[in-house]
Length: 486
Image 1 (tube, rainbow, N blue to C red):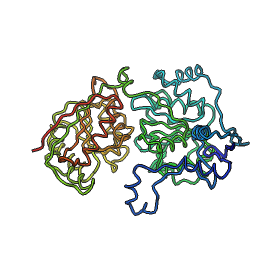
Image 2 (image 1 turned 180 degrees about the horizontal axis):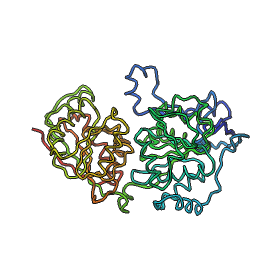
Image 3 (image 1 turned 90 degrees about the vertical axis):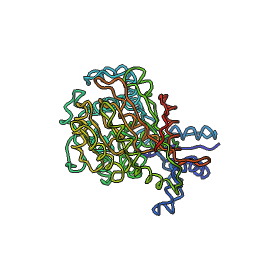
Image 4 (image 1 turned 60 degrees about the vertical axis):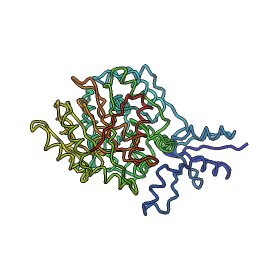
């Protein structure tokens, strides 16, 4: 019988020692072809790439520490024995904290003005108990309170902490959230993003990954704890490169609203952070009254049949279609409440939509445009104004407002551009679910296009089918409304 030795190298990697055939089997077991590989290989940059992700290196024997349970499953299926060898500096292969659930609950009550929910107590306890973890927690479930609790716990123990977020808006928002929980965050936290000083003596740093990933490894050596918010984005090469520089960070926690459903994505994130736990579900939060009730109206626009050579040609047709854009303009104009319109292409679609909407609504109604070119301070100002308004309109790109932005008084959301991305759709829906004063229900208008003929369905209509599957899996109620464009 073969024996696998797992030796702790640091807080990022284990080193596996075994017979040559074991290394090859592990390599095969932890190799995946990306679903989008066939599309990426059309790009000259990826021409010589075989489309696979390899999580185990047979040459070095290295594998992410967070994949321990998968290695154990591999060994059990083959009846291989496992030996564990610790590290004098980094400790044992498996380490746990002796904190108690009762102690964590008391600690969380003491540090926050906001009363935590039961699942928040449980999640923070599991995280601290196991030293690491990946937590799938949908929008409105209180991720920031759980992150805040972990930050306070490790700060009190003398740890140096790095919090990584995807956007500058989320840097500002998380600091504001910490203040709302009753902590003078400015005294303890240092913010890093474009235009901010990168040097500090403070023990808590919150930064966008874009501001950090080119920093030398030496910069990360002092961090004991790393927390990644919106962790579903951490599969990018620059992000994984950043995470693997944190060799001394024993405490590693990732939070995300959703995963993309692929095994590859999940295992990469588990490797970086730890075992995946689902905190709660959106439909449970709605039933318990933590989130607004949601209704989804799928507006399927019927076009005359057109043949498209590829997806991009179809998108060019859709976003420049005058009747379609007029329909969106009139829909926004006639909706009551604060409305978010999400688009993909800034110059080709977002800007023309904004002009049409801004020129047609009542002059007293506030209309905002937000894209990647909008300053962080301006985005935060838009968010704050929308919280105080009853009938504002925000026309925003998916990249700026689909993830993490917290607007409680948002009544309607419109998908002006089609997408089949599970992550993007669920994150976008999350923008409209937060409860606010005078808000009983949230409405999503999912606009899609039927440009098909018998025996040939267009690309974006198939994307609608993917979104409907997501709505069914999440137990969302939806209705399909067919509209003929004349």
